Image: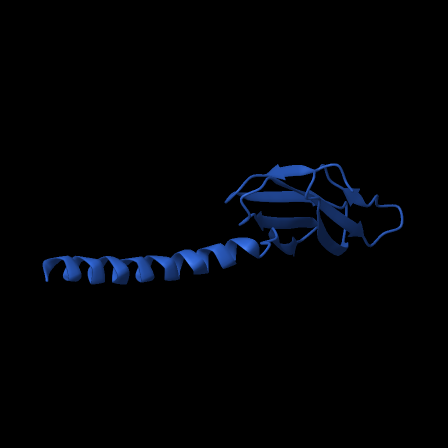
Length: 110
């Protein structure tokens, strides 16, 4: 009788463990892209990016300025490790038309 109890308890424990493990396995198969939130503060463009993926990622800030004589900005590629947050910022001399971030998973722009 005691053996059956342990066998049933072990089987129940195994099914409980398999549930979350199966869910974690399914979640790990779905790609989790780096997410960035952009904002404009005066003539400065800011992006805050978070990488939920277990792999290294790279992000690059881009800013389009309003004035034709004001050079647009393509910032450097910035590495962002697993579970890291980075803040990117740059500026125009005057007004900003748009701010966006590109994600470069392999870090070489392809």
